[in-house]
Amino acid sequence: MNRQALVQAIAAKQSYLCVGLDTDITKLPKHLQQHPNAVVEFNKAIIDATKDYCVSYKMNTAFYEAMGLKGWAAMEETLHYIPDTHFKIADAKRGDIGNTSSQYAKTFFETLPFDAVTVAPYMGEDSVRPFLEYDNKFTIVLGLTSNKGANDFQKLIVSNTSNDNNLVPTLLQGNTAEYLYKKVLATIAQWGTKDNLMFVVGATQASDLTAIRDIVPDHFLLIPGVGTQGGSLEDVSKFGLNKDGGLLVNASRAIIYASGKEDFASEAAEIAKQYQVEMRGYLQ
Image: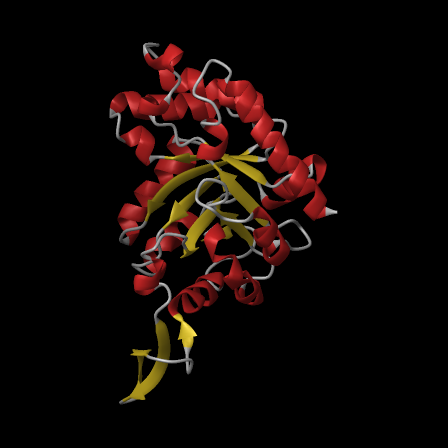
């Protein structure tokens, strides 16, 4: 799915909801626990129940990798079950030297036909570039995350000072320079375009969205952290929406674990519908 199709889906459904299929086999309803293909059966039921209210699904690969070969098979079967009308994200957070990143890109864009994959940019351009070489695929780069440890590095204040004609990053105290995450966003935005780059911004960082939109006004942002993690959909929408929508707001546990009983799918549908109704109001 390319950018134009995604924008059209958001407009048609009046929704920018992404449902996270971060399926933990230990949290499945008891009546599914003994099913030989429990994760897939659960995922299929969630997809059937929520597909009318969302435009995207995100699969956190860790939950599948933890199950070994059976987990990879479940991830692939689930992926192929998701309708082609929906944007499919591999939340894999990959990133390594160029030849290794090329293999990661092949994994998630060829072997597994995802539309997008999340990437960690710490190793620089050559670790991200292989993902950007695919047409009609998105590289979703970690920008500003919602975890407590985000402050360890992402909000360090950086400046460039001259030292023998070389630019050396210097950590500063105070307000005389920009945050590291802003430097990351501005730099990476030059490596691709709004048609192949997105950025992850945690919902609990909504107060930073105005500054982020100054840097990447037209790019899509993947926003995790709404729901059980405490992020505000209202705040994210207020500061993050652009003329094309420009957001994919992910909700995982709040939807897929809305009920631990046999009615889990219908309860998931109800929560997804509530998100969609609220989103429709923000889009108008």
